[in-house]
Picture (tube, rainbow, N blue to C red):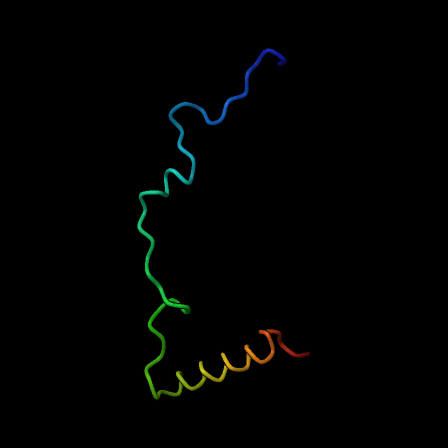
Length: 62
């Protein structure tokens, strides 16, 4: 084993970074989409949840 040289990757193999270099990344928002419709109940809940998370640093109280 002492005479065996260890090289990087086997010939013909590409690393993950090289394989992923040509893959397009999707453009997504913070929640994976455009968000709830303005003025909807879902939008109000999202705003209130975000305000709570900012005030408590995202930690749930026990």
